[in-house]
Image (cartoon, helix red, strand yellow):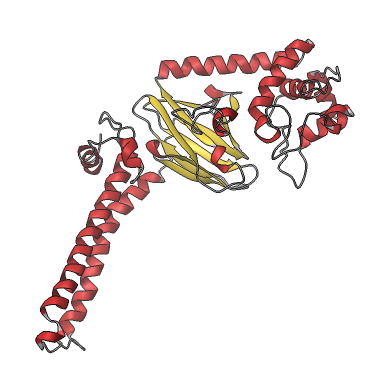
Length: 377
């Protein structure tokens, strides 16, 4: 059941949440007036309570000051009052601020205790920040073998202004995080490379993702819907290309999605044991390239933040050197190690694609077994 502050926040917010987000923090309430998360509504209620207390204090202090300046100005010949060692005044300016602080500390403490109460979670998800994507791994038995990366899905045409920008420009991904509604979900948040920050304001979660540390947060989303956020830590050149999208769905829909993801994971494992045709590897590799490589190496392999793939001595030279760059990355550069991010099939596919696309035309076909052999040395 909602507490009084959450209800007060809901009642005070008939305006569009999206419009409010531009000048104020998220309300935790949908445009239709339904509470998205009780905690979010409570945080916003606390925020507004403190805001109005500060407004009242400001009006009182500046009102008295302006009145005193006007009514007791020097031109009227008023003699200044003397408060030196005035016991009553000294008690007042000690007691009043203390009372105000207590008035703010009581509800703030209550809310903070709820924010950090990660007990009794019904589901746990490990979130790992990479430059510049998120990896989600479902840790519970029901989510066994389900882990995936979530990449920016906004097209390069929109980014480089050769196409109109969509409604969710830089706020759309290829694989959103999916959670069931009315379920307490605990997030374990860390990072693989630099500091990121996972932030989805409408579901009241914002935590830094720090390499070597695991921060905790939780949410219980009450309304089905799509909730969008971003990385809020300046994490590199493409920091702005690291959105977060959460789909909150019914329990039945979530169970169906989870079963499909587990089936796909099993199919990928089986695929790694097969030999795929050139066309199959090339088509899959193109998808992997567009999701993981294009942002740095360009849509035509022309390069950008990363080196060009077209005509590259790496992509047209020895296979082991090419696999080394993809699997292990390049130390001291923005080239990440994709060995842990991509399956063996995907590494084989994108290697095949890079060695034959953009005019490279080596004719090489790389199988998952080649990747396994390379990793095993």
